Length: 112
Image: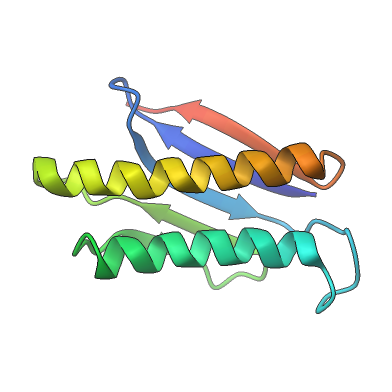
């Protein structure tokens, strides 16, 4: 199962996300669930860098794990644009989790 977590602050802003594990829907290389989750996560991270001009903190490298966190100092405009991208990610993750509930779990976790 793939576990997706969105980190949300006290102002209900998404401050980052993590995706961990393989869905187990199909063999590696044929797993449409993992491919969909990966496409959403990587596109969101790239868009934060290229469109919002941010350098989010990223942890990964481990097979089946990616974590992306917004940097601490952002302009209001950057935060606004980042929220649009991260809300889009949220919608995509929700849709996949609803379509494949045995393979994906989405959690929203409050952070300080």
